[in-house]
Length: 295
Length: 333
Image (cartoon, rainbow over all chains, first blue to last red; front, side, top):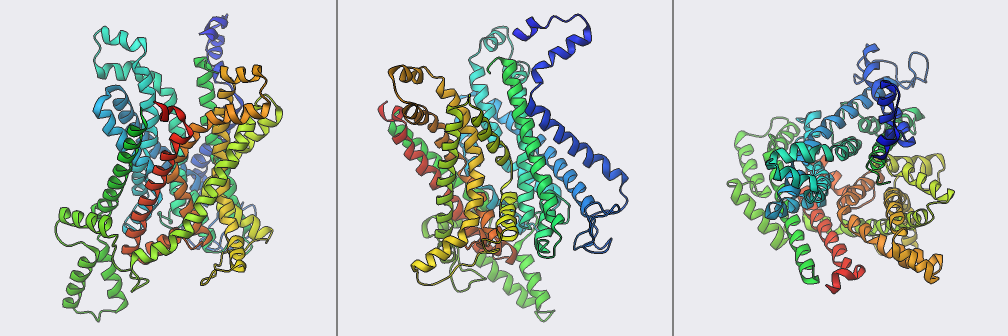
């Protein structure tokens, strides 16, 4: 690596920092800052809150913003600010849980398909392409209608995992395909490593950079899918999420009653959060590309 | 890969998508711990406030099971479901629109969805790729970065936020368009066509915006890579103009992955269309799905979903069959 050759530091701490220089880029910096502020804020702030914001009629309805209610209250007598904080937290937690599940499944499927190959690969890719092509929303709607009432917030996440792993599997597999031909893989095989050992200790480290990017993209996808279902009232709308807050604001006609903050605040928050996650993922992508010397 | 093999492979995928899609829609709700008939009966019983005898309830259950095709074991249900759906296109009657059949209800709404979806997909794809092409071809210029920033800002915004924001902006803050769309029924006239276009403008705008961002970003990346190919340099040395190089050399090659991506993302685009219809009360398949889901009209729900899967799979097939026309390498091998 040219970076290593250039970095000839004098102190140990200097060495550590220069090794991380390739990570620095504007997109990553902005994205990570946004995501960290929202994540830490939504995880820490609830510790200072005493009233559960999902309980209705805790306060007077439609109060304007004040020091007691930073964003006012909504038509259900809930504090808009705290509802929004809990929404961001719940959406992020759901996103991370789903992304973990999706990453595990798509890595296993993609790596095994790309590395084992043959008719196994053809069958697996047929299933993957099918899952990519099938429109997800109708299936989620029918599930939502059938299990309505008895579903929990986690069921929604589980369904998103079941239908969300295919894109990742496709990416991982195409990477495994190019890796299969590389010299160091042959080297490992001639040294007597078996398929599992090669997958775990040779291919996985190489793929992990892409997995991180895929992970963040899956967080985006999961939050988006749950929010989409919630906006049309088919998720667990009693749980505050970035979708359910808009669902309640729309069903109580927040725009007409003059409670603009109720609908504009979640829209702004969602756009900022999604922009942050997207910049983080493309930032990491660019950073890894620089490190590999591609760009 | 020759053209015959290519078409055969795509047809195989088409059939697999249909089969797996129909199988999932059949089994998933049946594997759920809740029985829709129990829900429906308890709903009826609470409506009749206890005036139904237990024999009547049992009879009702048998009737409903027959209607929903829930009689017999899972395998025979599955076989009869596939046979009914694929061979006779029969989903039974709709409960909400009785005596209209499900096929009628869905087929009435389908043209609305198709018109909206086709127009916006083509527009969003064409506009996004044009902007992306210009941004990628002139990627050393300052303006290109500005175009890319537009893409970065629009792309991550979810569909539902775009839709709600478009309503907020153009129907509330600047009341140019109607808050909720109203569509005239009956005979078609020029006047009515204008009214339909006027009412469909906002949902279409939201959909075009949604397709726009991704196409800019991915086309820009492809165009930058293609611009550096030797054959583009050769064209420049040969004296081909900027315009010719951009359209005939860079675009023709950078377009191919974009067509493949369009075929793969057609399901996602369809999701967006459904959602847009629901949010804007546009009288298409999505709105029917929403009404059926809240009203417990399971026949309609099944019909809409099955027809959606067929429609999406067919659209993907058509795009992939157009592909050899665009990529001569597949034709000539």
